[in-house]
Length: 252
Image (cartoon, rainbow, N blue to C red; front, top):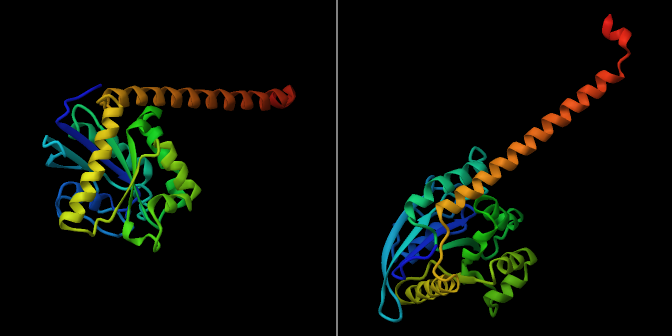
């Protein structure tokens, strides 16, 4: 579906400790809209929205909605990825009505872990394959790049990260959330321009709850069929065992 040009609705997704909340604060020109920490355990337990009136380079005002989410791959083993998936899917749509313009996949310099290779698979699993056209990879900790190294050179040092960026249409952006004042404002404006360009390339469309519900119904149907096939296979194996037992033993 398509939307008004004076709105921009963004959801932050990524591993715990990668700087989701800090990136959200930067976009909202705030240090406290979201609780940010470097901890490996998620501070964000539920999805939380924040809003900011952004003025673009043409002087047009946009209402920017940013939704922070619980992190994947939390070091707290009691918080499973499945629980995070369900919480995100059940909460973000009421905060981004009528739909999500952009999913920002947050990773960081020097911390692209083996689990994060599966980030795109997680998004495809939750929201379906078409959701990737709404994704941008945001790499935090830009100040930690090696001296003389640019963002693309860093991306190319990790085949898995390079594959993630390519899967997202080569949409990527580096940011140092420790910046403040005009330097940080310039960076966030550049990121918003990338989001805006992606929205235009998508003809103003956004990811809706209806699309998610369609994907969820399909996923539940596939799960039902898989369980039914497993039951049939188990029954066939049990019947085969019974068939091999001599009838005299069965009568006894």
